[in-house]
Amino acid sequence: QVQLVESGGGLVQAGGSLILSCLITPNRFGINAVAWYRQGAGHHRGMVALINDGRIEYADFVAGRFTISLDNTKNTVFLQMNDLKPTDTAVYYCYVDTPQRGSFWGQGTQVTVSS
Image 1: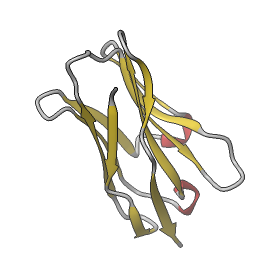
Image 2: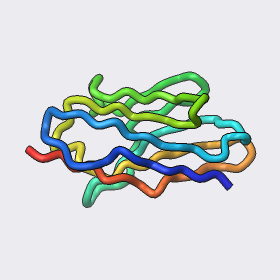
Image 3: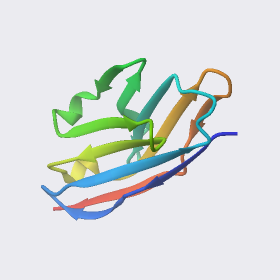
């Protein structure tokens, strides 16, 4: 069983920054892909950023404001978020796909951006 523990969410003013972290334990099964998704009130869960076999993709609304990274030495995936907007308010979820154990989700971390 793979567990994902997210941290770093909180309340920030528009234009501010946050760094989300997702600790992946254990990591001995290997990783196909990691990603961050988000779900705002009244919206479906959607992809924010992903790393898949070395390829990085971002949702269009990111527009250069976010950066996803994976530190294999710390078994942690990060999402650096800059220039946050009220429309970025959502619960952010970490996602991992493994070749042997399938896919897993974190519990979610709330990000609230005030205007």
